[in-house]
Amino acid sequence: MDRIARLQEFLVANPADSFVQHALALEYVKLGEESKARALFENILAADENYIGSYYHLAKLLERIQETEAAIAVYEKGMERSKAAGDNHAYSELRSAYEDLTF
Image: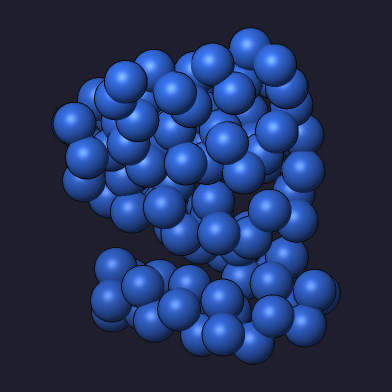
């Protein structure tokens, strides 16, 4: 069974599992299925704004599809949330990507 099918099975059992949604979104990114990946990342962050890793990946996806303003907003929100959570590593990664995009 391929990864996507396996992850989809996990989601059937627990549709609110952010970890599984995130993993599935990353698989869709690998396949170039941006709309599916985007929907999953946005769903994760709507349900749990502290799922910090999804900010980076969503913003990178938005950059790739030329939605620069949306990517900037996601980076900014991610930096805000990671700083509030005390996740300095994630904050640094988000800030670096943000600066690469905005400067």
